[in-house]
Amino acid sequence: MSSSFNLFSLSPKMKILHFSWVAFFISFFVWFNHAPLLGMIANELGLDSAQIKTLLILNVALTIPARIIIGMVTDQYGPRKTYSLLLLICSIPCAMFAMADSFEQLALARFLLGFIGAGFVIGIRLVSEWFPANQLGTAEGIYGGWGNFGSAAAAMILPILAVIFGGDDGWRYAVGITGIICFVYSFIFYFGVRDTPAGATYFKPKSSKAMEVTSVGDFYLLILMKVPLFGALALLNWKLSPAGVSLVSENASVLIYIGLAALFIYEVYAAYQVNKSIFTTPVEPIHQYEFKQVAVLNVLYFATFGSELAVVSMLPLFFAETFGLDMIYAGLLASSYAFMNLLSRPLGGWISDKYGRKKTLMILTTGLSLGYAVMASISGDWPLVLAVAAAMSCSFFVQAGEGAVFAAVPLIKRRLTGQIAGMTGAYGNVGAVCYLTVLSFVSYSAFFWVIAVSAFVGLLMLFLMSEPKGAMAEVLPDGTVELIKVD
Image 1 (cartoon, rainbow, N blue to C red):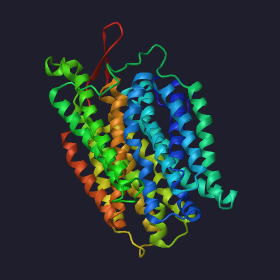
Image 2: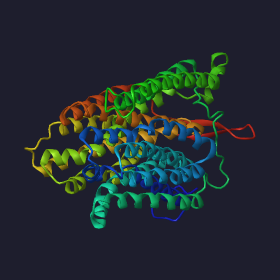
Image 3: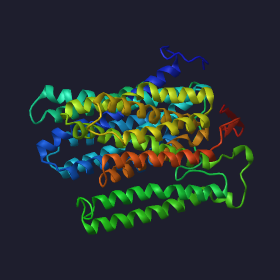
Image 4: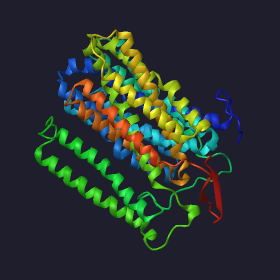
């Protein structure tokens, strides 16, 4: 594999990188095809403010378990098959949303479309198979940043498409086009990529039932880190119950709570079954990894990607209501927040490659905490250009931070990369659900302050993180050990 990093070369690893970010771009293009069109959708179907905010929460809810599931499936069956099937299947709820005639139909389609947000996890594993450690942050940053730009593209392009099609159904045609693109690319991706370079081994976990850990302490930390995942789903259930927007009945809500509790118990049992040997037989030092690394990255992604998801969803409405703008203009301005992904996320990965993962994360997390504190002070008295500049500056630190997080994720344990990326990615969605739920109760200013404070908590947790050094060990099919460099 070539050691150079020429983004415009036709080398096999660069082809894989481009196939991957385009798949991720389409995932986000579809995932956020509703956000810039909410004004039109609300006008046609008579949605109130509570229903609109419910759609925003539903859009990120299913991605929490989906990223965990997709991470396991990717590690077991490979990125090529997993991503292709995900894109193919998710074109169906996209079509459902385009044809919906009621809030209930919109809600169901939006909930199911949350699954496409799990596509991000697949590409993280795929890119990590093709790039060495000293280029991995840059490659993952390009993958994540250029792919993430799909949400900005949706904000810029879809309102214009809706106007071009015109009439009450203009938004339906715009959403439908994104579904067609998703369907077609699923086949292009399947026939265009391979899971590993020629001659390389695709390492699989010992079990796909639960994540492996290598110490008793890490086992209990793994269980602890599962609690917020289920807590976010319980929070969503509460929001949809009669105590919230009454989308589900009281009886159904109780059954969902019981189901979540039962699923959590099963998750603990499955984790024990996969890891029970560590309670009697210590894992050899060469095969150990520190789960605290995963835990710290989870919290950081909660604050970075969680806030991005929440802010991308609400920013068009924020600009429209704060500055009295029409939704098309507000959507174009709001896209500036996600626009920064093109450069900031790759830059976060590149800086991590060059100057170290931990140091980079500390600087960027400080910047995003301060950035949201500034956004909390924005009011209608501000010059509009200054408000947009503040959003873009904050966005730089948020997305560069995301790039730095996933510059570290693939360096923990190769065969578990999909599962680790799945859990860390899921924490981003937990953050989005929590932040959007907060938004439904407080002012925009308080919403931004909550994000700023949670980012500061992530900064404090960074002191527990260790800089990746040396090599991680994986066992080849013949029983010999391969050492994969991480610095």
